[in-house]
Length: 373
Image 1 (cartoon, rainbow, N blue to C red):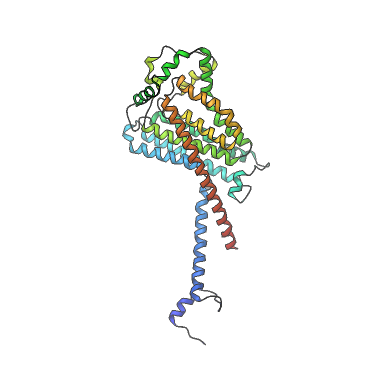
Image 2 (image 1 turned 180 degrees about the vertical axis):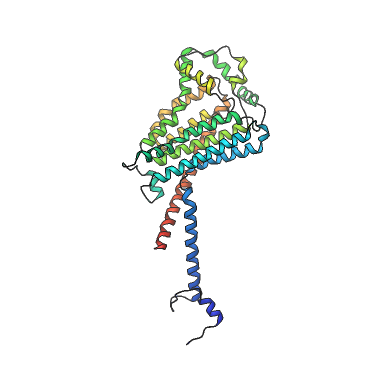
């Protein structure tokens, strides 16, 4: 019988089975420990990634915006009348987003084990009514989220600065054009032109709905969430700028300069109704109308080219209508174009990162399942 030394015993004690000629005892121990470590790491990563898999880039942008705006509310709480109320509402909205994503993920079973395949997979015709309800709610809640954030800006517009900054943009517009554009355009106003411009202004509300509806109907899930992410990034950038740089718009800042109220038909009346009951005083720079329109335009260009050409003339008229209707300065339009385009560029990058992460997670899950076998 061969007697091993203490050091040899310690070296071979970690390996339960070791065959001479395959590898040394030290290598065998290292291999087994490394294998176990990799298995534990993969298990832990899978456990952590499972809840996060329910969220897409849109959710991370939305929750990120809520986190940033909540932090600003805490920092500048002294400038608010009811900071705790606003924080509570922010927290409630975040919880609703998380709950909705988890509910939809639990009932809408993926049709493929690959997260990449699931982005473009078709819906199973045997889905129950409850499954379809949660799926539809998950896909269409972004529109309500955008509306909530915009309306909330009415309370956050003076969070950082107590004074309106319109004088700066009035001076910029005059330097750029030599006139005050909204006042100068009054000479061309007629009931018919007012009606057309107000119609163009209203088209903003349908760009994202129509484009999203087409992508949803065609079950282009990747395209749908890409467009929503472009819009979310563009809006979030615009909301943060509006908090730090409060602009109330020509409607208020130049109220004594108008020669009279604009007159038109049903579209003009509809706009007056919306402006009377839903107007947010502030948040004019950059124009969220323009930012949202350009984010949708870029989304149409990438995912449904024919819709881009259909939307482009209306979107350009809508940009003019924001000044015609005294809602924005020319500077607001430029700001909206920039933030909408940034939303597209950053949003596209986020979607690529999501796809790359999905591929990596899928490969690791397959490797882990093979190791366990």
